[in-house]
Image (cartoon, rainbow over all chains, first blue to last red):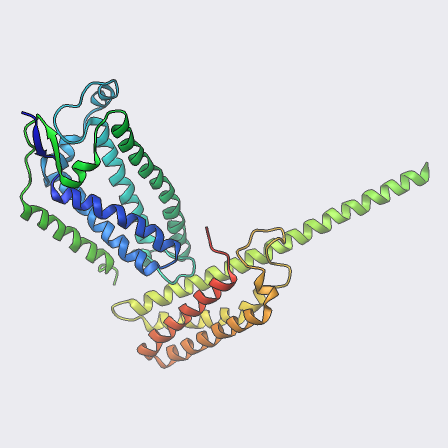
Length: 215
Length: 156
């Protein structure tokens, strides 16, 4: 029966809608050289990335990597027009999610080692690096951000493509979590598990921010 | 005919030496800028070391003192890193703004503020007073930032 089904759980939506403004804020704070804000924003992004990685293994059905990562044959079949089975990410979209998470991990990871041009501000792991190596990390961090922006542009283009060509609204379900579907509703992970994963991610980020094994 | 050849070779010689002179001027400007940038990298490295030594769980006083001395020495030298003609348009890329030379008094003021802050930090480091060191590190950082806002192109 076609009925509204919960396709995205609240942890996935929360993570998504926190990342969007945080990425914009990170860019802006770097532009105006408020690297203290930038670092704080980076810690929040790091928490969300760690959470999303954990959630990919223990989260709700549509959040799990093993549920949405499909082989190249499935991707090619989908591109040839074969309808995606089930509910959640289609075979191509699943890989887009992985690309986005990896890009974020690279972005935030390089930031941990980055040193600003005057040696005034630095990521928590810059203490292991020479000034020049930290500067190289910062330049790479800036360069990879441009690649990341291209990925975001692709993400927005895909949403527009589905809306215009396929008459499919992807934004609504990402806000409400609900989507009309005839497929059985996906299995949702319990709330306590999401809270536990957020707790672990927060603790890991805090440990990172203190670079506690450094001193 | 002989005159023409002599004139031509004289002309060629002048042109060649002009080109050579220009090239020498170019390389020396480039090397002035290169030296300046490498000195600023040393300053940045010393500041990074200072920040880490101050923020460490057990402040590393030996590192604080060593970096304070480096910063103070480099601060003294800083005004000499900007000889006239080493600004933008001198043939090599630089983030130094023309205001360094057009507002030489303003630049000298900033350099002096920086040198004072570096000397204060060095004195606090010699006394080994952590609270004073923290204050002076913050002041020094503000001196870097305010001078860079005024006299350095944004790195984009």
